[in-house]
Image 1 (cartoon, rainbow, N blue to C red):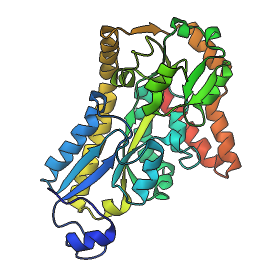
Image 2 (cartoon, helix red, strand yellow):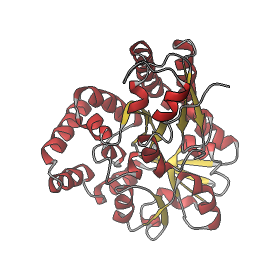
Image 3 (cartoon, rainbow, N blue to C red):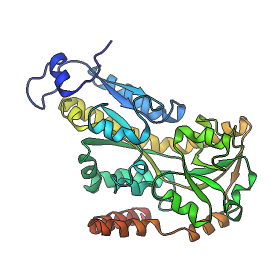
Length: 339
């Protein structure tokens, strides 16, 4: 069995290191903590792990542990930064006070589609310094961004296509901004982690979930919640990051191969997201669920009632002394959306 990556001290005992920052001279297995359960929806990430092993001739292997097996979603950023694990899938909205720039990608009603969100993210990561600089403070390096299919409301009541009918309903929420769009229509936001959604629907702790069709299928949410209404909003998904100290010990040759594969994984995700989500909807219906389109007029009404979250983000960043950078990001996004 391949050696697992340990702390810097442990590495000195089991892996030859010739100098500070030197490359590994033999095989290493990187531990990747994931908050989601294993599913077809994450195939791109599993393919990336396999491709890294092949491209490095087995020098770098990646072992993914799903469903919070190496730490719950909100813990993974800290665990990776401290090198308790080597890689992780990080949800920016779980860290609204730490990932101030990245969290804006998970603000509803800013992007028009998952593809748009991820194409802008990929470009911004190359053109603007703020996103990697933010991760630098936690000792992790950005590899690629996962797109999410557009979010749907899922629950046992068929009236989820009516904004008026959602007033007073308990809607699954997370992060700093999703609760704001729920409150704007008189609904009650309830913070529920991904792994708790099924039980929350089953017990009536929430009336409707708020997540994409791929995860509705993967978690079988159509069982406690027959009706899924949407799309409601499009946001970007989690980040794939690697501990910076771990990264620095990988050879330049293998780093280049990993970055190329990470870029390809991001592009593959963008290309596959529509297909994955469409197939997920068909499977939900085949399993007995019902998917109802959200009327454009109702969605427009919801967006009209919701606060301007992009401007709210800029205002918040102003208070933190980072308003100029936030305005630059916002203008960049607007320019890219118009292209």
